[in-house]
Amino acid sequence: MSIRPKIPATIVTGFLGSGKTTLLRHILAHAGGRRIAVIVNEFGELGIDGEILRGCGIGCEDEGGERAGQLYELANGCLCCTVQEEFYPVMRELIARRDDIDHILIETSGLALPKPLVQAFNWPEIRNACTVDAVITVVDVPAAAAGQFAANPQAVDAQRRADPNLDHESPLHELFEDQLSAADLVILSKTDLADETARATVEALVREELPPAVKVVASEHGRIDLDLVLGLGAAAEDNIHLRASHHDHEEGDAHDHDHDAFQSVSVELPAVDRERLLAILHDLVQAHTIYRIKGFVALPGKPMRLVVHGVGRRFDSYFDRRWLTDETPRTRLVLIGEDLDASALAAALAVAEAVETA
Image 1: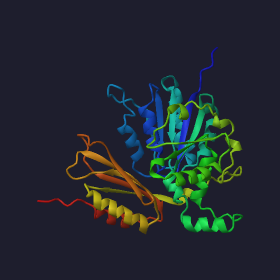
Image 2: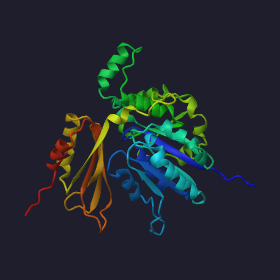
Image 3: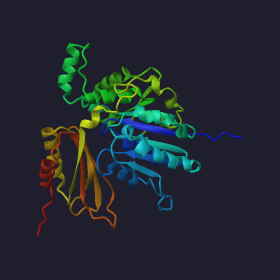
């Protein structure tokens, strides 16, 4: 009796806004006939990343018909905390369709710890049918060079230089290091937005956390040779217990880790003035503890939907598709951070609403 091959699964992890969804878009656009199922895990009420992936064709047959069940969204923001409640049922459904699937892509939220997710592949029903082909950690080079992984990067860096024996690292730094400790491959993203000095600094920072066998490669706009990211055959579930992390739990301990302090605020508006909106977002990032902003924007008189991404004080925007005939163009934003005042943020953003002229 022949043994059925396991479905390879690639876990893509990385900090908020590191470029995970852009990488997935590239993989899906160059799948070369591979039948790929995607699990998207978002932090926040609005499925922004899932919508972006649908915009590049995920979930549709070549003829344009809907292919049910190819894109799965887990919207509570932390796969590591909900593997039983949400992840396990999704994997069971994929396993039942294993003859129709060549590969599984799992995009974690920027707040998820990869190690517990990899460990879930040791559950008998999953282990018998699936294997972790690789854990890929995406690192935003400009953000890392600017110290965006700490709540107060300048102060933390100064304290660490003054006394390297003391643990002054923030939960964000610990999360970053845990994502690296689980990696089988590290992709340095947005290298086109950083100079050679910044890139070399970040690469050196990353390599400090990695064993020599883990490769570090660069990518611009998510573009990378698929042979570098698919088919690595790492079987990470076999050795994940050997990869130490800040959030390892003693047996019997409650699963309680630092990202509980994060929260998301969703704001919906009508069409807005683009320049006014971006100016307000810049001001809000400086006035509040906001780590990430993402969403869709409706502009007056524009038939296209504008995608907005913000990490720290850097914002990117682009038109991804036309508004559909059955859609009402609306602006939908998700702000992720700590101690956020939803009412104050909504009131500030309301000023961006476009003024109709007679």
